[in-house]
Amino acid sequence: MSEVKVAAAQQPEPWLRGTSTEVSSVGRGVLHALELAHEDVYRWCDPLADDDFHARPFDLPSIAFQLKHMVRSLDRLLTYAEGNQLSGEQIALLKSEMDAVGSREEIFAELDQGLELSARRVRALSAGDLEQPRFVGKKQLPTSVGGLLVHVADHTQRHVGQAVTTAKVLLAGKSL
Image 1 (tube, rainbow, N blue to C red):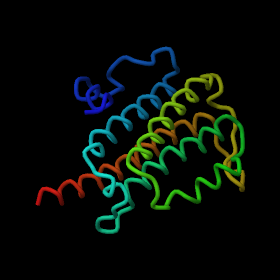
Image 2 (image 1 turned 90 degrees about the vertical axis):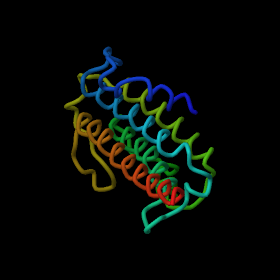
Image 3 (image 1 turned 180 degrees about the vertical axis):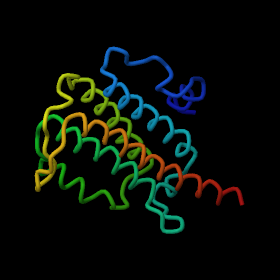
C-alpha cells in the first residue's frame, strides 16, 4: 500500500487536518485540494494494472489522460498565475495528453512530481497578489492570481473525479 494511501486512510480530509496554516486561506484551500487529489488518485487507481491506465470503458477518457491532463494543466495554470506565458514545451505536452503512452509507474511518477512542484509554486505566491491581474492564453483572457488559484483547485478536483469514476468502472468490471 502506498504511503499516500496509508496517510489518507488514517486521517480526516486534508482541509480538516489543520495543516498549511502559514499559507493564506486561498493558498491553503488549493494545497488541500492538491493533497486530496493525490490521496483519491492513489486510493482508487493504485489497485489497477498497467493496461487499466489506458483503458476507455464505455468510451470514458482514460485514467492516463486524466492524470496527465491534471498535472500538466496545473503547470500551465500556475505559469499564468506567476505572470508568464506558456513555453513551447508546455504546448507540446498539452498536445500529447491524449496519447496512450506511459506505464502506470511513469504516470504515477509524473503525478507525484507534478503535485509536489505545484504545491511549492502555490506556496511561493503571495497572499497580497491575489487581486493582481493575469492573462490566459493566446487571446489574453483576463483573470487574477486568485481566480487562477481557485481554478487550480476546481480543475484538479474535476479531473480526479473523472479518473476515480473510470477506476470504479474498471474495478467493478473485474469483480463481475
